[in-house]
Amino acid sequence: QKEVEQNSGPLSVPEGAIASLNCTYSDRGSQSFFWYRQYSGKSPELIMFIYSNGDKEDGRFTAQLNKASQYVSLLIRDSQPSDSATYLCAVMNTGNQFYFGTGTSLTVIP
Amino acid sequence: DVKVTQSSRYLVKRTGEKVFLECVQDMDHENMFWYRQDPGLGLRLIYFSYDVKMKEKGDIPEGYSVSREKKERFSLILESASTNQTSMYLCASSSPAGTVYNEQFFGPGTRLTVL
Image (cartoon, rainbow over all chains, first blue to last red):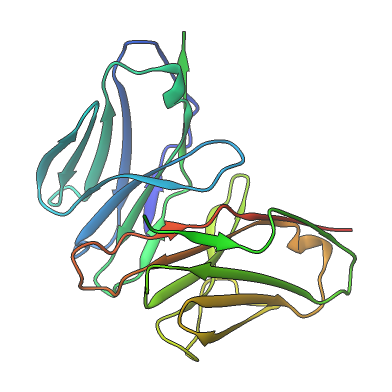
């Protein structure tokens, strides 16, 4: 079983819609959760992190964490073509090891 | 701003050559990491280091070695490059586990082609 799993997509949404990206993790004791965005040919950049159960909002982005279900998600409201990228979920587990999912490719259609 | 730099953006080498990839960070981070990224496989950890002169194997260390002589610099060495090491190589750094903000910051990447 992989430490972090994501649906590879591709996920396509129309401009202005909500994009929903999902991630599950295997280590129940994991404490830190991160979402990175990676444009084609570029390196990953951090867009959100979350440590506590519930929602965390930052502009158009909302991270949601449910530790009981071992599930973390990223919602992008009012999606823009510039949001088209691969989104990587990352988890730091109880052994302080950092694991990345393989990423979900998002395309926002104008 | 955290800055992680890598010595080259693009590199072309021949099979059997020794290849050095260098990474420098300016945030006084203890932790540094080397990943390779291939389509469909995601980021795979090659080596990491928690301190100067310290190194730990990641998931795919075979064919690679590393060096960390100074806190800000972490080098990845391909002793004898092979075509299956053609990939995007990404360096990252972070503050220690247990600190509040321990996300990894990435360099721009080096796209290595081995012919």
